[in-house]
Length: 210
Image 1 (cartoon, one colour):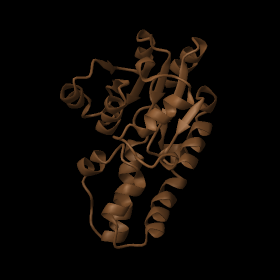
Image 2: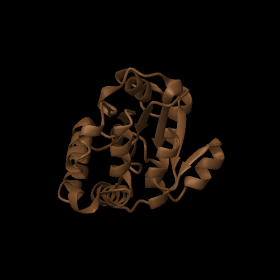
Image 3: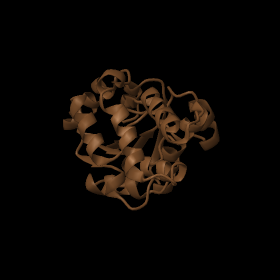
């Protein structure tokens, strides 16, 4: 019986895709004086930001790079980022059914908590595990296992909802049930590659799985 649902954040609960793409292009132009393909940027979705930036901008001071990235987003987040369709009503319904809810994200803690507060959904979650809470990151199982433990649940009773290969592999590595959101451009490809049984057309479809 499923009594626990844990979510990724970016691309799963909130549509941050275009803002992230624009942010990467901004710092590529600033530091490397070149453009970066949308396909490449999207392939990094689900990876911790620090890991991506250190790999791609290793010859520059990290604090300068991440500072430019964050500054670009600071005045744009509230205007450019929205929750996906039926997210809030789904969370409200699941909470009313006493489903344990958590987040396991590669986003940093401070920005995750700020985003949850901005969208007024923070109260639905009893566990929030972010990149700075773990030493190993998705696709490793550590973030998901920590969230499950924080919720005093077990892997066999847990769904992990995400949008990227990192999320699916994390769920599989943790022996939890992976659930894929179906609203990304590569969702069908991922579903086939990982043989995902549960693919959501909208977040409300989760209510049929509990």
